[in-house]
Image 1 (tube, one colour):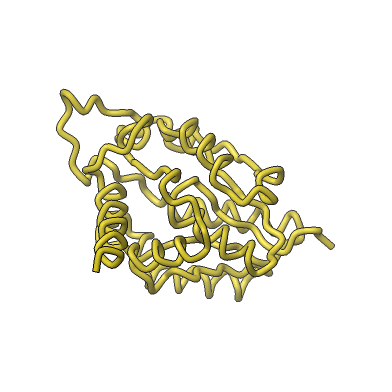
Image 2 (cartoon, one colour):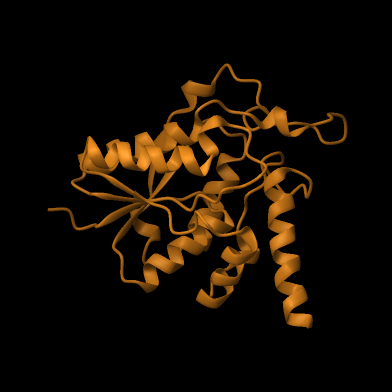
Length: 212
């Protein structure tokens, strides 16, 4: 019997950090799982993750390295762009089967630890390019893992917008301003990649509600 009841895919971004605070508030005993898939910003993400997670969760962070999978990829999530020179478009951020890989690795890890629940902060974003980013795909994968294994995927934010997640984060005391989720720059939010655009819109939405 594991001392933990769930695994959380955690990256240091706003969504997964908000979910971590939600699970902490609910008394869940969580292993935060950080996947190093060769992303150029992995050091920034990991240092941010340690800073923004609920303190009780930080000592139990686990890291799994799978960088060889995307070693040959030209994706700008692997090979960092020079924003002074390179013109980066959304298609340049494509990584095949990334979410499928993340969830199956998390499922295998969880099952090896005797844990039956995986939490993911997936949001059905309109910016997603990968075929494994749709809500339909995640619903089918959730059913598959449940039917043919002992692991269940829980995605509490799947029907929410980024703004709604940000609102929950504020209510829970999540350090949203310290989270990091840029796909292009490994030091600061670029402000123009899909993740940054969604994040800025969500924060602006919160600001406008406060102003009104």
